[in-house]
Image (cartoon, rainbow, N blue to C red; front, top):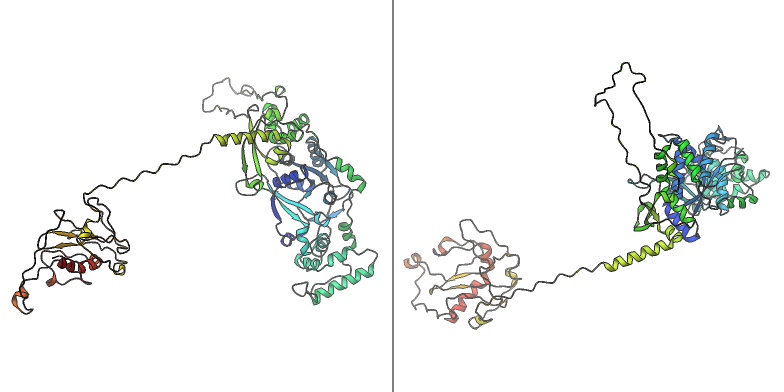
Length: 626
C-alpha cells in the first residue's frame, strides 16, 4: 500500500521505543500518549496469525493488552462508506463485516473508543492528528503524510534478538523530510508520477527517484494550488515540467530525462482531489470525538465471557489465564483511576526495550487487580470409559498402554506477581509508593558500612651484621666509571661443565690467600644484567662502595714481591714458567690458552665485559696500599 519505493527516499525513520514516547508525553502533558490506529492495517496483518482458536481476533486482544500496559490511549478508526470505490485497480470495500463487528466489540469491552470514518480511515486519522486530538498516527504506509499528518508511526515490532514482544516504532516527522521537498504537496506529486493507491501505474518510465526530484524542485506545491477549472494554469504547469525534464535548466534533476513523456491529460485532477480533498468528519464533530477519548472502565465480566466464547478460555483454568494475561494492564488502569494496588517496589532499572527510560519493579496480587469471581468457575473434568464399544469384557490393560496424565503447574493468583512499570507512570499516579521506595533505598545505603582499608605490613628491620656503616671506606677510595661500558649487557648462560659465578662480584687470588669480592650496586651500570641473590643478607651500603670479605675485621699488610729483574721475553724460563696472575684477565674476546692461569677458571664473556672497569683499577689500589 502507499507509494512503492518511497522508504528509500524517506529513510528508515527514527527508531524509538513506544514506552519512551509515552513517558515523555506523560511528563510533558500530564496524560497518556494518544494515537490513532487504522484498524484495516491490523486486520490485514492478523490474517497471517496461526494457532489456537480465532487467531486474528486473539492477536488484536494481546495488542490491546500491551497498549494499556505501557500505557497508551488509542482510538481505532474503521473505513467508512464514502471511501474510493477502487484502490490499486481493485474494488475497495469496507472489509469483512464479521471481523469488523468482533473487533469493535472487543475494543469497546476494553473501554476504548472505536470510530467509523466517513471515508478513508487514514485520512480521518490524519485529521485527528492535525487538530491535536491525538499525538500521532500508527499506520504501515505513508498515505497519512499525503493527507497532512505530521507525525506517523509504523513498524511496531521487537528491537533486538532477545526480545520477541513489540517495543519500538519507526517515527516519521514531516519536519525532518520537508527539506527534501517530501512534505504533503511533494508526496502527492510523487504518488501521481510514480504511482499510488488511486493511480498505481503513474507515468510510464517514471520512478520514485525522478518524482522526488520533481517534488524537491517545487512542482508539488505549485500543483496543489491549482484549481480544476483553471485549465490554462494546468497547461502552463505541465509545459514547465516538460521543459525541466528535457533541458534540466535549473539543475533540479541529476540528469536530463528526454525520453520521459508527459501526456496531455496529466495530472489526473480527480485522483488529485482524492489526496487534496479527502472525505473526513466535519469540524463540528471533532469535539464529540474528543469526548470519546475520556478514560473508561474495562468491563471485566463481559470481557471474561468474550474470551470464554472466542478463545475457549473456559473453566477455572481459562479464568486463571485471563487473570494472568490482564494483570499488568489492569494494574496500570487502576493506577490511572486513583486505585493504588502496588504491594511493594523492589528494584529500578534502565533497559534497551524502553530506550533507557527508568523502570520500577512493582509487585501486586493478580486477584486484586483483576477481581473476577473464581468461585463460580469449575475445574475441567473430562470423564471417559472403554466399555461402550468394547469387543469383550476384558477390563485389564497393561501399564504401558495406560497414559499418565501430567498435571500442569497452575498459576497462583494469590501470590504476588512482579512487573516492570515506567517510573514516570508510578511517580504521576502513585507518588506515595515512590516515597516509600526512596526512603527504603536511603536507609539501605546507610546500613552499608564502608570497606575497611587493609593495614600495610610493617617492613622487617634489617639484621645487624656487626660491621659499622662506611667502615670499608677507610681502606679504599675509588671513582665511579662510566655507565656506558656496562649498559645493555646480558648475562650469558654458563656452560654445564663450569660452576656458576655470581654476576655482581669478581674474585681475586692474592699471595696471602685472601679473597676480595668487589661489587658495584649501581642499577644503571648493571642494566640488563640479572644478579644472583646473596647467600646471607647484608646491610645496605652506598652504591659506590666496595665490599671486602676478610677473615678478621682489619686487613693484614700485603707482602711485597721480591725485587728481582724480570727475565727477558726470549729466555726459556719466561716461556716455561707462567707469570702469577692476581686477577682473571678480561678481554673483549675469548682469551688464548697461554694467557690463562691453570689454577683459574675463565669467566663468561658477558661477565668479563661487565667487570672490566673494576679489574683494571684494583691492581693499582692494591699496589698503592702495599
